[in-house]
Image 1 (spheres, rainbow over the protein chains, first blue to last red):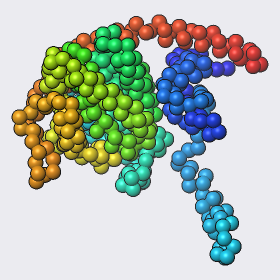
Image 2 (tube, rainbow over the protein chains, first blue to last red; image 1 turned 180 degrees about the vertical axis):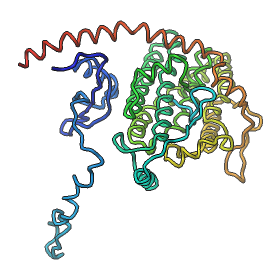
Image 3 (cartoon, chains in turn red, brown; image 1 turned 180 degrees about the horizontal axis):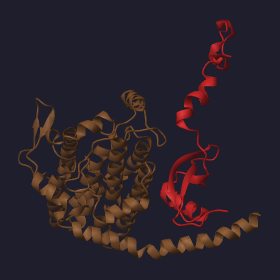
Length: 97
Length: 336
């Protein structure tokens, strides 16, 4: 059961600047509900045609990784340089690959 | 717009930085190493209490300045000389409201609530830029605010785009993108007036005379009298000193004034070949501090207008919340 609303909750706003591009986080705002958040986001973040689509997400619904865990969380990728194309040497004669 | 390019204690006698509690040495070392490497601090990162406090004060003062800054210009929306100028002014004032929102959001990431910050402003505990405690007497003032006040703010805000605190820096990038329109529309409105009657030209000159010194003071006290700047520089919050920003502003503005056809009210203002900068006369810091401390011509009126606007909007906020509460169980029932 969701707790009864006391204040306008916080929403994170994501805007797609152009058809074909991804939605990008651009800021946050307080709004009473999702529709309200969308309208506020339009007024605040797209006054100069900065977007063709908006997502709003309750900030409380975002699960974020803990920066203190950065080491162990991302470490496994650090020693796997063979995952990058530059790891491999290809004769120049082959040209672009 | 807008910020005072320096941090003032919100209440007289309140120290800018209280004695910090003992911080864990390893965390502090990691924090300082990241700052020294010109890295960014994000909301979830550990930071010293004093860094957090300084940022909350500076960002919230900046946010307050944006929304109080809507008032002197808002007074002229209904009196703009044409529909075109009215539309432009509404757009600008709306931008300022948006800038306030970006900044309040950035401050909230530091753990201080929006309501708490607004309470501090409305109770008179929090400061905002002193420039808004002066009246806008005629239409030329609207142009001069765009040209000079926003011009001074841009000088100050561009370096803040590289501030060490990520959310503040990102908010400033967004603000700076919109700010150029503010300065250009003001300058252009003045250009039009300068092509008008002798009376209109005199209005522009009078306005420049009244605002020039106040704009120079916006950059804050001379470096020699800004003991707290050093900490801001060390933390990567302040990138350029008050005096250097002021100099940049003067050097950029003098040629603009020449093109416009106005003089700047400073008999000591002249090019210094050796320094490669303009020299200027002394700034009246007593008047500045008197305004900062609440005794400017419009301090009381601005705050009263702001509080009234907030109170008058209470029923709207309540109604939206009541509507959302009613919708919530309905939406859950449909989802079930």
